[in-house]
Amino acid sequence: MTFAFTDEQLALAETVRDVLRAHCPPAALRSERRPAWEQLAGIGFFGLLLPPDADGLGLRLVDAVAALEETGRACLPGPVVETAVAAPYLLDDVAKLASGSVCVSVLLPGQAYAPDADLADLLVVARADGLHLVSRESVRLASRPGADPCRRLFDVSFDDSVRLDRSYVPALRRATVATAAQLIGVARHLLAVTVAHAGVRTQFGAAIGSFQAVKHQLADVAIALDFAAPLVYRAALSVDRPVPTVDRDVSAAKAAAGETAALAARVALQVHGAIGYTEELDLRFWLARAWSLSAAYGGSAVHRARVRTSVIGGDLRRYP
Image (cartoon, rainbow, N blue to C red):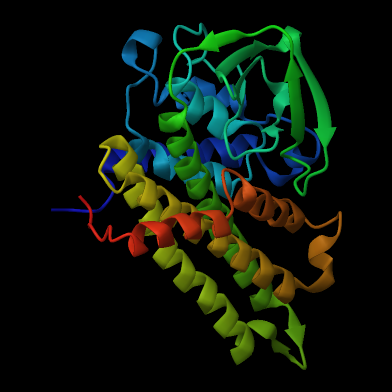
């Protein structure tokens, strides 16, 4: 048995990374709301999880999880998870969804606000009576404050909608795991830029990266990543099966990824100093993304509580 990614899965992630490097540089985060979306659509990114009869590739989440990690590494703006991951399990027969021409935002249970709803052509909103599909023309949005300038939050209200007769659970599970994968990508980028900064920033005549205290902090982030990433990959496998422990696996992945990204952000800010908050330094975008995605689809406290309840309840089953 092998737990490694296949060559095809790694090639997909590498292709997404190349596209984002070329079309979503840090400068684009200052001027564009959806950089690289057209180019990602060109390689089929938004149709990865759609069935072939909807012009998709019919892949599993585990096939796309490494590519989703790259969207976090690049701090890609826009409702990426909602359009590429949640929408295929919430909507049927939506023309141009695979092409990326239709942008989707969602407001599912556990969420207070819809991310990037002002960019969405369609919104899926959960209410007490079920799921509602709302068009851009029918929705009323109220902007709400958030930590991330590239992931804007909105309160949603509407009068006209179409009822969706389906469960939100499969989409919510996958959106949570996809967000955890993005958090792993964010943490990897924060660690890389912080290590690079520690190698060139000098104090007392030496690079601060040579100081043992700094080394220990960076090592803590690297270790946290090594523990969190496999939990995310396992959760991606679990939702595709699904296995009896799927909800516990999803919560373990989100809690670990959120805490790792938060740790990476804290260490990055400590090593960079106050300059990390400044408008001039691109680091601030990844700091904000770590904080915003850590809270998305349930914060670490919520998911740790779910894991604790499962374990205390006697569910000690292991994958698969």
